[in-house]
Structures are given as structure tokens and as C-alpha cells.
Image 1 (cartoon, each protein chain N blue to C red):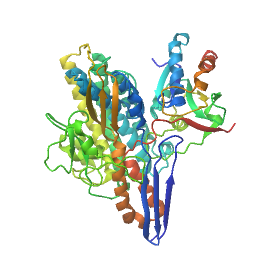
Image 2 (image 1 turned 180 degrees about the horizontal axis):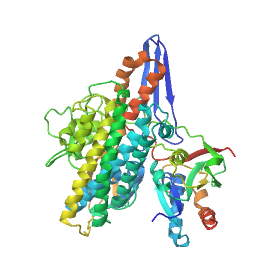
Image 3 (image 1 turned 180 degrees about the vertical axis):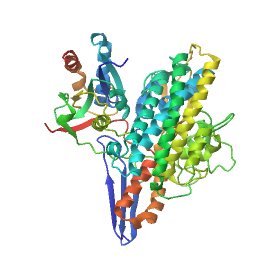
Image 4 (image 1 turned 90 degrees about the vertical axis):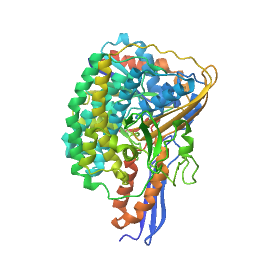
Length: 437
Length: 154
């Protein structure tokens, strides 16, 4: 048994955002076991103050290059809530279709580019190409489909241009939706291939469980595996009704923890988790048949408390969003696409928007003056909601796995952080180079 | 139809000089009629999405804010072979992709443009604001001329 362990994974990106792992074990006694992260970019709240109601979604789309559609949707919904704007059924469905494209994009990227290298014991996806060429190509093919899908609905892959409070500035043509539908039908086989590849190495997911509170959206009317509508629920709610999204601050209960400059959150216990596994644990019975089939392939059942299974829940969701979108396109085409005019009258008000980002529930709240200028904003991102839970996982994981030695423990902790699919240092990414020629 | 050349502007306009790539694309787009063979794309901080934007092109011109050890405002043309990244990545997140890694992946997959040219612009300040520093903001003409020159020279 290793009596001494010293893990100090200290990565700093130039401007903001780093995730540090510190573990010290001396003579078999754990002296330090910490997940440390600085504040995520809350400054966006200051940036939207003074901006018009129809500028907000464009600005906040830059918070994150991976979840830009989700941030835009949350902001758009919050503005609509504040200004009392109704959205047509057609716009609502097209937005959901747009949102699904981002779930597929992000999940495939996460499982394929970050989790798969762990499972195949490759340092990153680049060397994985030679180890599992066809698997990587399949992942890239599906990611490409998801990107084109976003392009069609959101105007471009990242940082959408078609969203506006009240509706959409541009809608796809019927023929384009038909083509998308055919592409999605053809993508099902690739998704199953990806699932089979991950299943072949699923024994590399650490066998680790910790009883956890899982928080996500829930929609009862109609019962839906929801990413976009509904109220807030948790696995600890025990039959209590879901909490309206306008009251999200009473769910997140943000607080400052001395270990981190990022605010932590807690609801019924010391921490909670958000993300695909949270959605699954609250809504599994509502997955599409193909989503359920994928969960069954891995033996994933409601009530699972292994955080590494978040990646498997993401795979089930990729199948779900593709299958559900095929149906959604049928619904849209049957009703016929109409050009709709958007009319919004600014007024004073406060509103909230809540949607499921690929990595978990996301909250936006804005307040406007009578002219529709933003006077206050509050955003709570999923990654911040997971920090306390990652810490709690660390505290159980380290004693259980420290017998395996420093290198295995370090890899296990890194995989654990990755399994939460965190959003760290995404608002900047500039090149940092030195010249070799 | 996919055009022969793609000009990609990377960065975040909410982070001061980090947004220089996006700003230059905005300017170049307004003159895109002069370059019918090129697509101009504001790719933001899209990470792995770049892989798909590069696929099927003969040439890619990538404009980005870059720490190169030069005085702030300096624009420098270079190819991927001329540099190596000194960026530290935690590999815990999808959100910290390095474009040089994306190019390496594109090469491995056999779908990398045969020619890639970077225009790196040394920032003066990366901070939370929706405007460039005066140093970079005052040199936009010089930057667009350098990129237009590259496009004209093809």
C-alpha cells in the first residue's frame, strides 16, 4: 500500500479559470483532499447592465463557446418572462430542435474527445486516432452532423444569430428540415456504434458510488424528458412539487467557501449534482425508446449514484435527442412552417429563464426598467453547482482508491472531474506560442 | 458550396483584445465581395468546431489574439510549423481547446487544408470589456491590409 501520496495538479490558463487537484497522504493519513476552482465568469452580469432587452441573448452567448445556444435560450426565456412575451408553438418547437443540436454536439464531443481517451488509456484524442481510427472518425462524423444541425437552426454553429425574444429572426425551409431529418435517421447507426465502442471499455469506469442529490428540470404536463420547459426538481424532493424556476435562488443557495473563489451551491444536503445523470435520475422513464435502449446496454438504472456514469447518461441522451428530433420535424412539417412576426413591447419587469445546458441546469434572471434596459442580472452556471459535489466525491474517492498508488489515484480524480463535463476557462482561449523556426 | 479558402476569426469580444479576431472578421466580411473565393467566419471560442470548419478547404487563414512575446499590437504571420504551444491545458474540460491541437487532429484525419496561415496579434489587455485597447483599435487598418494582402497573393 502507498503510504505517501502527493498529487498537485495545478493548471493555470492565462486569464481566468483553472482547476486544481490537491491530495496529500502521509503515512496513510489523508492530510489534504481538495478540488479548487476560481470563480467562473460572473462579470457577464455587469456587462449586460444598461443593455437593451434584445441585446442580452447575443452578449451572453459569448459566455461559453460550447453552451452558447443554451445561454442564449436561457436569456431569451428570461427576457420573455420579464416582458410578458408569448412565444408561438412553432417558435417553441424550433427552439427545442435547436437546443437538441447543442446537446448532441456537446455530449458527443465530451464522450468522444475527453472520456474515450481515458477509457482507452490514451493521453488525448490525437493519439487515439491511430489506436481506434474508425471510432474517432465515427465520433467526428456525428459531431459534424450536430454542428450542421446547429447551423441550420441557430444561424451558425456557435453564438446563435436567429434567437430573439418573442421568436426567431429566421426559420429553416421545409426542404432543409426534411434533409436534416434524413441525416438524423442515418446518424442513429453511428450513435449505436459509438455506444458499442464505449461499452467495450466500460469496465474502465471506476466502480464508485456516493449517495447524491440530483437536481434537474422536470415537466409533468405533458410528461417529457425535458431540457427546455418545466420547473426544478431533485431526487431529494420526496413527492414535494417542483420549484418554479423564478425561485431558483432558493434551490441553488449559493454560498462562499474558503476553499474556492467560485460560489458553491447546496439544496437539501451539503451538495448536489446537475447534468445528464441528474436528468436521467429524475426523468429516466420519459426517455425515448432508443434512449432507454442505450441506458439498458450499460445497465444504467434510475437511482444510479456513480458520477462516472454521467457519460453513459449523456450517450442515452444523444440517442434521445436524435430520435425525438426526428418526430419533432414530422410535427413541424405536418403543421406547415409559417413566417411569424415578432412584436415585443418593452416594460419594467423581472424574469427568469432556466434550461438544461448539456452539463446541467442553468439559471438566468434579469430585471428591466420601463424602457427595456437591463438594470440587474444574475446567472448561475451548472459547473458552479457541481463544485461542492465534486469535493464530496473526492472525500469518498481518495480513501477508497488510494491503495492503488499515486498514478492511478491521480488518473481516477482527473477522470472524476472530467465526468462532470465542467465548463472551465471557456471565455478565453487565445494562442500562447513560442517560435521554433 | 464550400469555398477554397476560409478566413477564421477566433476570440471573445467580451474580453477586450481577446476579441481582435472576431472584430477583424466583421470588418473583412463587409469587404468580402473583393474575395469571392473565401468564406469569412466568426468562430468565437468554438473549440473543436474548428475541425469541421477546416475540412474541405485548400487554405485556412486564422486570425487570433496570441501571446508571442512581442510588443502589444504587433501582428505576425506564421505557419503552424513555425510555433509550438506553451499553453498549459488541464484536459478536464471541452472548453480549453488549443487550435494547434485541432490542426494536429485534422492532419491525422487527413482533412487538413494544405496551407494554414496564422495572423497572431499580441494583446495589450485581456480584460472584461467589450472594446479593444487603443493600441489594437488604432491599428485595425494595418491588420486588415495584412490579411487582404494574404488573400490577394493566393
